Each structure stands twice: as structure tokens, then as C-alpha cells.
Length: 350
Ligand SMILES: Nc1nc2[nH]c(O)nc2c(=O)[nH]1
Image 1 (cartoon, rainbow, N blue to C red):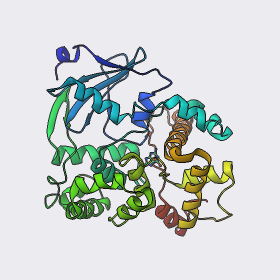
Image 2 (cartoon, protein in one colour):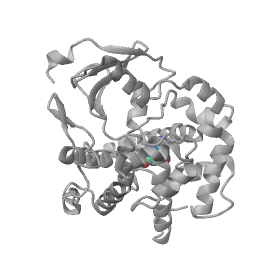
Image 3 (cartoon, helix red, strand yellow):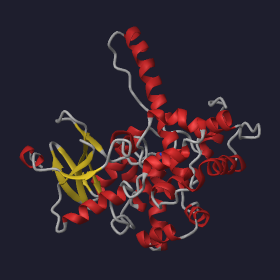
Image 4 (cartoon, rainbow, N blue to C red):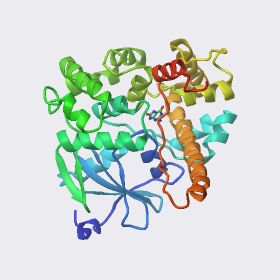
């Protein structure tokens, strides 16, 4: 897309900032393929939803967008974004409801307007398989390379190419572990390939869509039969790919938070399956049927704190290393299984 095309008129959907924090929503580990364009003064994001390439910004209490792919029906583009950001949900009312909890009120003050994304299920599944014990920047690199290799070219903005997320038919029987390893997937290459094959056998995207209609517990149990899908990955997928808003992903950070702030954990020193359930149940008790969305807000607050901590550490280190650039990485919180593995190797103090 040329600079001239970039200058074309923005379409808009009214959304005040209390209802949407685009920056934190798109950068806090829910979705991994949005990129920030650097050429404008304001924060502008580019990314794809389904087969559409969007450019987005939040400006003047509006979600403003341009579609870089040809569109036959402009109202469809608008609806795609309404669905993706769940703009039909009154977020300030939800925050008000969750804020009856003192801890939430304190922690969420830095993170107003976190929308829970409604992502295409196959993309959510494969991205979250890549997410455990990983950094956001690395997960993004892996998922973008997967799209580049197996997705459809949708357009170019500046010097960047954008691709759709591959369909299950473009992956089944095609995706090779060796290729994924070359793309940097490491041990997750096997999980991705095997899960692709299994989803294909079960009916592909249609099967995943059917999991939306199933009760949360049943959908989660089905997902956990896939290679590389433990409790946390299944819950991320249920929440951000299938719309089960009561699904609560639990990692070591959420677990610590719940132990500290809600006194749950029963003195256990490891995140066992029983403790995992207790933590999720506590969230559901406090936040009701939208507990997963409340978790996404607290998760974002936690990442923000980590980031600030890293930046503070960086500044200190910068002084010592006189100009050597420190890597800025935000590690995805650990899944339950990894948490237990780490305990075995005594690398994680719990
Ligand atoms: N909102 C959340 N996003 C996540 N990404 C990821 O990898 N884990 C989580 C999570 O627990 N919550």
C-alpha cells in the first residue's frame, strides 16, 4: 500500500477511551500479529482479521479504520471489527461490576478499556500452543512466519507484507515439522503439526466453531486431547478463540496473585490440577460469568508491571554497561505443566 493510499479517508466507529485501549488490547498477549506502523505521529496498527487487512487507530473517541484489501460491502468491514473487538459489550459497566472487588479496582486503574478479542479459533489455537513459556516478541515472530509460509498474501504496507492466517486445508498434510523448526518453532513444531492433523481429522474450522456452542467444560476437555494443549492453553483458546468468557487461564503469575490477594491456594507449593481449578473457581466466584475477561485485565496489568520493572532494570543496567542495549523481553507467564517442571529443576521460586 502506498503512502497515497494510506492518506485515504478513515472510516469510523464511535468508541470513547474508557471503552477501548487499543494499544494495550493489541499488545498484551491476546493476539500476536498486530504491528505498529511508525510513520505517523499517532499510534497506528496494521493487521489482519480473517481475509481482511486493516489499518487501525483510536482517535477523537473513534475507532478509525481503513481496509487495505478490496471490499464488496463496507458494512461487512465494520461488522468484522465490531465482532473482533466485541464492541457490542458495554465495557465500562463490566469494569464497574468487577470493581466491586477492591483488588481489581486497584490493579485495573492502569488498564482501563481492555477489550477481550474474539479471534478466529484456528489462529487462537495455534498461537496459544506457541505461547507457553515464551516471549510475546518470539510468539509474534513464529506466528507471522507461519502466515508468511502458509497463508495468502493480502497486501504490502510500507516495506511489510501481510498474509492471512492459513486455513486448516492449507496446513493439513502440508505443514512439516522440519520447516517449522527452520521457522524457529523449536519443540513446539511437533505440537503444531500434530494438532493441525488432529483438527483436520475432526472437521477443521467447522469442528472448532462447534466448540463455541458446547458448554465451556466440554469444549475445554475436547481441546485438551490435542497435542501441546494443557489446561492453560485450552483456557486461552476457550476464552479468546471460542468466546467462553468464564474460562480463566491460570499461570504462575495469576496463581501468585490469587494466593496473595484472595488467599486461595491451600498452602500448596505447586500449581497442581486441583489448585488450577480452585484458582479459576475463585475468579468465577468473584467476577461471575465474565471472569475470563476480568482475568485478561489483571493479566495485562501484570504484564505492564513486568514491563515497567524491566525498563527500570534496564535503566540501571544501561548506566553500568554504558550504552550497550539490553534486550527488552516480556516472558509469557508459565503454564501449569511448565510451572511444575520448573519446580523439579528448582529454577522457579514458588
Ligand atoms: N489475557 C490473557 N492473555 C494471555 N496470553 C497468554 O499467553 N496467556 C494469557 C492469559 O492468561 N491471559
